[in-house]
Image (cartoon, rainbow, N blue to C red; front, side):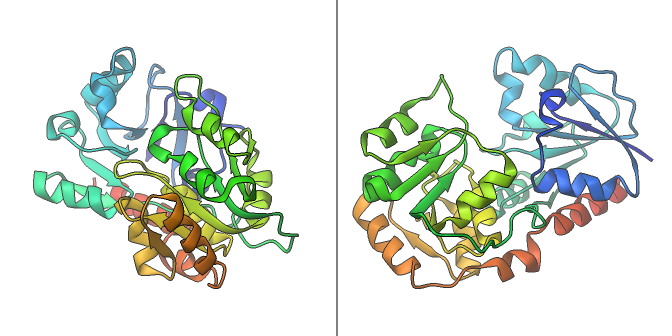
Length: 291
């Protein structure tokens, strides 16, 4: 069987891409023939794995390539990239692979076939014995739904924030800089792991529909205690199942949560029990076989 993995921008990402999905695909390559395609390429696989947020079916220029995959007469699994779901956006996919319980619950209510498939690259994201430099770290793309300014308002110069800047949404990192926090650009995977390990606590300030689950699980995989926000169900899911801390999204609550988190142990064992790239690959393989 041949699998077509389709992701807009994969041509540019392929050499640097090393997250849990990449590691899962490396395992699937041992069983299947896999091709990596842009949505505009000729797609020759028997099954398509398409990574995207379904809302892009209605988002201007992006809608062209989403609709092309959406309408293809092939077996298709949508690797769901976040946000709320509308049934008509995904009705031509045979299966949705969702990352979070909240999206699985949506699929149940809308009668959409789905599986849960997610994990992080635990070969890369792991504990390192390096010197601590920061009280808190937060990694991920600069985006208002990630609310990075909250951690910087709470921790000031004791906070490190790093990730890809966006000209279209500069507010989070700009506000972090006004708090005298350390703001760094996007890092390689090797440097990201070092920076996570150089902090005592990882804080994820993502909001309700904001994702950020990779940040949470990657920090857990590094055995760093994690703090997430009470209005972020996608991240609360992991913290409620382990020994992380949930707090209100304000600077006083975050500061207190960080103090408490510094007394806690990390949660790598929890990640290794169900959210590794091997779990990700196994879930995707089961989904492919079900078609």
